[in-house]
Image 1 (cartoon, rainbow, N blue to C red):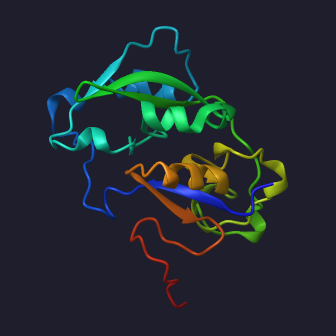
Image 2: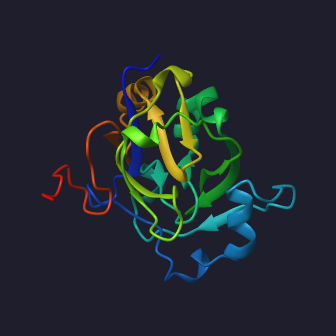
Length: 198
């Protein structure tokens, strides 16, 4: 059982790194077809390799990119390091960024390990029980295999990892992943650990 669980964000914001700019024509996709595939709602049988452009020379040195409405893209190198840990919840679909090989994360399963009642979460006003954001997670770690790179059903576009995944990624010195201790209060919009006074 993992001692810690981490929410993963792309650290482009924290380290002035590259990002997918959707003002670039090649990055505009048919989202009505692509997102249902990436979210496991439609078969990937007719998927074709998606190509993206990042206008930075160091774009391929970054190993995780956010792709709004999905779980994002990971590099071939990160996929190798994750090994079977990524296959718990994801199928990896081939993609390219500037002619470098990446994998789109297509989530095909979730792990329901969140104790929503014990977490600090923002709930939708118009849909009782629907979680919009989680600031501090209460996670039932005994439900997680280790190593594990996963999503939860409450917010299936948020990616999480166990401590051993964090250790392996950091040992490989991969750029592009920002590991946030899921059990510590954190605002992913402002990248702040300071809880606002009520």
